[in-house]
Amino acid sequence: MTDLLDETELDSYRDRFAAHLSQTVPGRKEFVVGSASGCTLTDAGGRDYLDMTSGIAVANVGHSHPEVVAAIQRQAARYTHVNVYGRFVVPEQVEIVERITGVTGPGMDVAYLTSSGAESTECALKLARKYTGRPKFVAMERAYHGRTLGALSVSWREEWRKPFEPLLPEVVFVPFDDLEAAAAAIDERTAAVIVEPIQGEGGIRVPSDDYLPGLRRLTREKGALLIVDEVQGGMGRSGRWFAHQNWDVEPDIITMAKAVGGGLPLGAVISTPEIFATFIDPPLSHLTTMGGNPLSCAAGIAAFDVMVRENLVEASATKGEYLRGRLGELRAEFPEAMVDIRGKGLWCAFEVAGDANVVARAMQERGVLVGSVLNSSGTVRVTPPLVVTEAEIDRFVEVLRTVLADGIGVAS
Ligand SMILES: Cc1ncc(COP(=O)(O)O)c(C=O)c1O
Image (cartoon, rainbow, N blue to C red; front, side):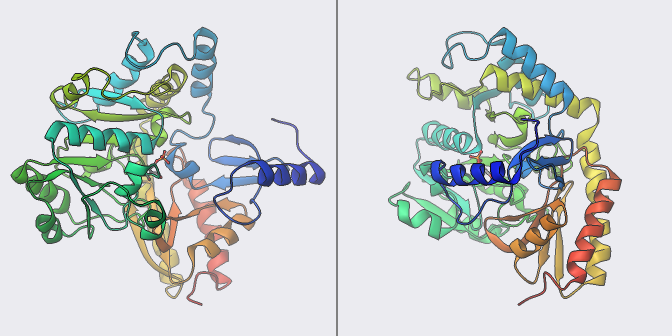
């Protein structure tokens, strides 16, 4: 849709959206989407916004990257969906998995392709249970792994879990970045510990340097697997291909989604051939119709190649430093509003003393998109496409300065 809509047409879309799309968030929708390119999102009325969210860590190569668009067009003209996982060889699946396993650790050579993050979590939980023959999972306070029943079982926030109980039995939550608590919870019944190497929806929280290596040691001691959830932190977001690579740790299972499909629905679970052998005994122990869809794989291949050619992983690290440095200037200017700055690479956040949603709304009114997170009320998420320029970061900082100067962000 390229034509601009007038007020009547915009209102009509809003009303029809409210009437026919299942609502999970109350209130009037913010705007009607028109188009998106690079770091700019344009509403259907023609107003531009600087996108510092990337559709929550999806548009890592920027919106509608020309090479991704061309790859989608080429693939759509050849074939889209042709079979249910497991029967034919789909070359695009081979190409994307070889690329991904080329940047994961040694031995992590096999992938199961999915369509979303929650689906990757489900696959990983099943894999861990079947491989170990054990029932229990250890998960983290503030964790988020998706909203399907299994993923919900290992996601922390109680108000979203309670109404759907009974969920998976034997899930124990322990505080993030607390090895003593983890040691007390991991035992001989534990199939796996599932952890986001840096917590995303928990507030972009970076653990101590000994935490992930410590979890690795504890899980090995008890014969449990270590699942790292890279759905949000993967594909260069943290300044490394995968967030756990910021530390010296080799997980058993890696889950991913979001940016891996270059904007199309694609997820992956990566593990060793030995662990994945469990899914063929009996045959069809796991199955999906749309997982690894060729169109999504083609977009993912193009996005991956853009990441490599444009050095976007390194760019994420250096621009992230620049962004946090600029935020530091604002923190010095407005210490009553901005109380913390966290992150690695362009996986970044700042904490306000007040409500993050109020800050995000004020930024949006001034033409910049940032977001809140699910499990940490004062956290403002700043996760721009990895192609963001220093000039765009400066623009974001100047707009944020005007918001903070108006007293927005202080405790109410
Ligand atoms: C760490 C993490 N895991 C899993 C998910 C679920 O992904 P999806 O929304 O694609 O199901 C998310 C989504 O935000 C996430 O941040």
